[in-house]
Image (cartoon, rainbow, N blue to C red):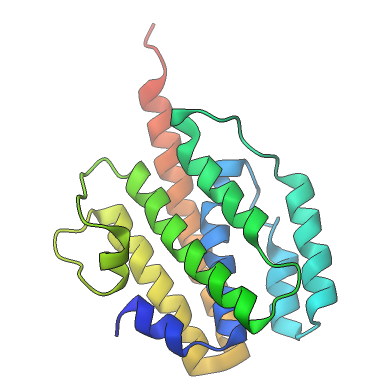
Amino acid sequence: MSLVDLMGQADERGLAASGLACLDRCVPLLGGDDEILRPLWGSLADGSGAADWGASLEQARGKLAEPARSEENEAALLVHRMLAAAPAEPTAAEVRLWADACSVASLQIHRLLDPAEDASPVDSRREGRTQDMPPLVAAELRRQITVLELLAEHGVGGLRPALEVSTEGRRVLRAVVSRRARGRKPRS
């Protein structure tokens, strides 16, 4: 089943977790640590609702500053937009729009960071056309699908494994960013 199909079938919690997972995997581009979004995951797990979600979201926004605008920072700017667009109250309609936007942004971020060329539109990848996908983008697409499948299959019980999938993706992205930074340093 394509990512678009899975998102179409996902419930409110699944969509919120999907958007949050995309953001969580990309937060290293904003200098965030591994725990910065943990309270948002907690509010999804315990069902504490909009109040805890909104407060946790504001804390994360306060800790993650907007990056400087530059061509080199395009990926970080996309991450910041994901964070800024997160709904203060995770209602079904708002979460659906946010999760969809996060999915597209996260795939675009991975495409920007992947040294392999990809001429296909991100939307075609989300619809299932995955031939000749660059490896970093393919891995991100698999993670997005896995998160939605875990939540569809296990409900709230799928949040912990979804967080583990996100954590693994964050480590991969952090390594890619580190490798790119080393490649840009002038040699003495």
